[in-house]
Length: 129
Image (cartoon, rainbow, N blue to C red; front, side, top):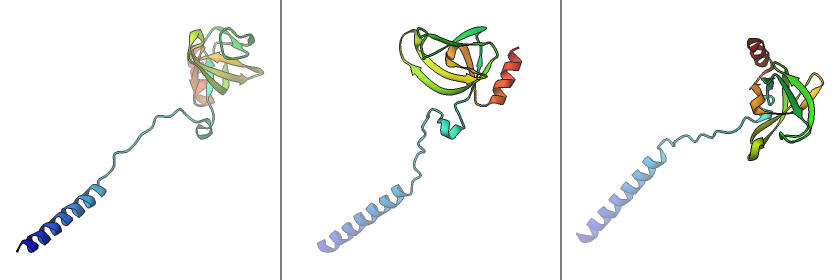
């Protein structure tokens, strides 16, 4: 009788283990989400900027202490062609390389507003005037 109980116990244990494997394997996993920066290749470009400063100096390189390049005025709409982040000092923040209407240079995020399309940038510039 003891061998029969052992066989019954081992069969029961095997059944419980198989049941656990099936139930655990069939549970729906939690979705994993990632918050990533917009990729220019996927988003169709880096966007469009509307200058918010009355009269701003675009810089030849990212940074307030770099030499001046072109100038832009409030409401000017320029295409963003590159970005660079500064992590310390008074240059901290995102710098945008802007181009348009023969003007080009770097501008700090505090002196502009960013829009995903030229149409939205035009609407925002008109509303601000």
